[in-house]
Length: 205
Image 1 (cartoon, rainbow, N blue to C red):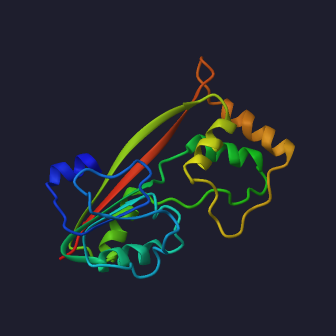
Image 2: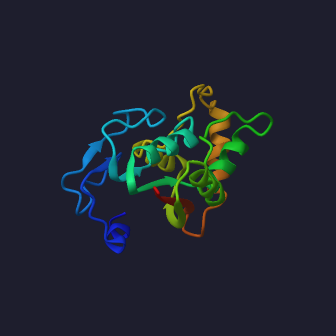
């Protein structure tokens, strides 16, 4: 986000930063900050209009992503810019395989649905942004155990956000998941998990 802001030479007078866990963005000293849970992204945004809105993973697990993007656009002033980052559909392939191996006959929904680049582009158009672009970058992280990966996801508030939570895995199913995960380990016992980070940028007419 910081590099993108510098490249675009944005100097917004009114900005809203949602869900930033990494501190303030440069050049946004007077921005309004909202932590996850401060307000519902699926309802009209309070306090607008804003020249710039940034969302860090706040849209990844909303129930109605099209509505959230629409409200984000409506909260912008004319010519305003919205940017949001979220984990994309190309993420956590090894974890998904492990969950299927844990319950091969009837797998339970344990991971929130994720959008891909094409779907994100279509959603920005549907929300009414005049111009829009979706960028994707890959982040590779090595793990020595399934448990460490799950702990990291929970620390980043990326655990199961489904309303109807599936029952916990039994001991046998958990061991199958661990074994399936480590089945993709390299010679050093590390499983490289991939995270696709999507950055959505939209301009209001």
